[in-house]
Image (cartoon, rainbow over the protein chains, first blue to last red):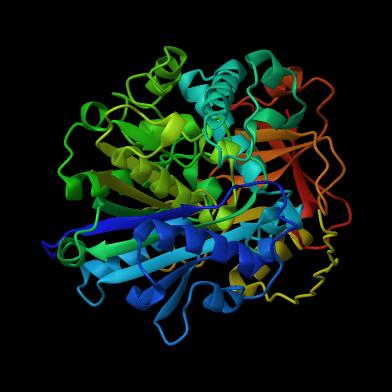
Length: 393
Length: 151
């Protein structure tokens, strides 16, 4: 492994809303790119390669929409690679950009993308199509139903209640209200979450992420380039990915390797990131976390998998105690997280971007005071492909 | 504020998917015998349902058909109250069942449950509850030929 570190030198996030009728898809990509380039203080000639962040085409309704993105990212005459890892796409794209630089093949790499889920308005039809046509497609599967079944198993194993789930939404909405980029910024109460209509029990409307439109981009560079050009940076010190079986029914039954209540491969991915970053006691060393959790219940198994608590299920009581709030022991999703903003192609990139802003001390009203080390995660596939990172000042 | 225009696009694509030998055998048994079979991994002994031609754990071909069920226990469930495009009219309940003799769980609908009150229904469907597999009288050889009912 190269001893030269890889730094983040530019971050751009558009505002996220249901619809962006003022911008076409490539124009929305360009918006995030322009902000990241401005943040990095570089012009496009400095960018040596582009990693393009785009999850299923059917969400934007454009086949292989990365082709339209080439112009928006200034990709002409440059290496250009699309990454699609479902919900994990954004963090996988940052990881691919990291590999470009860590390999010493490139000094400066741009990663960017956008999504317009609000124009699809039918994301569960798209997500039903991720199930295999041989066996499971005729069932009414979608990501909500899949993660409702994870919630049911988590309830049975660890005693999570619907009120516990509501507490996650209340926390994240309160934090999103401080983040001008977030999509859902209205503060809600436990009673309001509990009174919202049931979608797939135990998941209610206010336990769900929105369908967001927006773009994001990041510029990564080698330590040598950063030093030679006297640039400011934060550092990616841990990178992990891990996958588990496609078959949801194999994550239950007799002695499953990956239990569907939990996020088994997310835990394995965090182990890899922590080992690389030299983190031995995450519950003491991690100061801020942006964990991909599109439904309130999934924040618990993400906190468990990141080992921010001593054992799985302890996240429920610790969240109730306020440990994961802004101002608490380890703030989780101070941006409001995926629960408040989900433009799928860049959602997991936003997790990395938000942690980078935190350890940089540039997160604004939702800044975690004094944070120097943070973690980010992304979940993709049918709860089966996970990416994680450690970011340090 | 300028006038912003849009246009509607519909994707409607028909695929004729081949199911392969393993799934074809599974569905013909459902159609002709009203029975569910899994595939055993010789190395671990685990019976995979729905049947797969190879184990994702040992990466070896599975070697034997094993009849499973019709009894089993609920491993996961949800009750859906929201209408989604191209999915059934709500409410409905479905989930995963570990059939007797199997090691992995099979998806299917739960029928015969009053879904008026989700909390009452959730108690009836709780993990570990015994169910049996029911088969349609007129079977086409597909997943919707069978469903689960509480015994």
